[in-house]
Image (tube, rainbow, N blue to C red; front, side, top):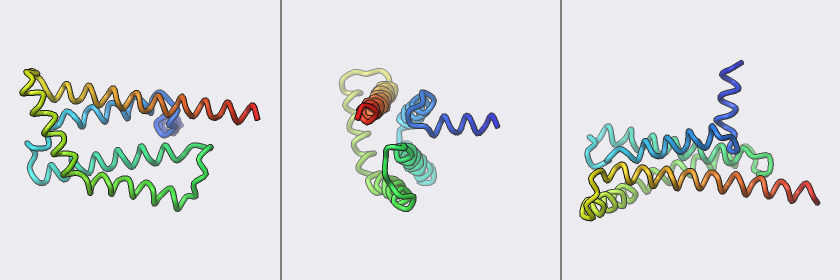
Length: 143
C-alpha cells in the first residue's frame, strides 16, 4: 500500500513530490552533454527526455479540472513525446550553442550552469501551474 501512496504523490501534479522529481530529472538530464554520447547512448538520452515529457504531460492531464477524454489524453501524451523526439536534434544544437557560449564567457562548469537554469525553469513552471490551478479552483468554488 505504501508504494501506491508514493506513486499517487508522484503522479499528482500539485504535490511537492511531483515538482521535486520532475525538477531533479530535468536537471539531471541537462547535466549530460549529448555531443559526447555514442549513437546508442544518444538514443537512450533522447528516449529519457521523451519519457519525462510524456510523464509531465500525462500528470498535467490528470487534473480533475481538465476535461480530456482518456483517448485524447493518450494522444496528447504520445504527441508530446513524439514532438520531443522530432525536435531532438534542434534541441541538442541549441544546447551546444548555450554550452559553448558559457565556455566562451569563462564559465568553469557550463553543464552545471545549464542544469541549474533548467532546474529553476522547471520548478518555476511547476509552481506556476500549481498556483494557477489552485487559483482557478478557488474561483470555481466561489461561483
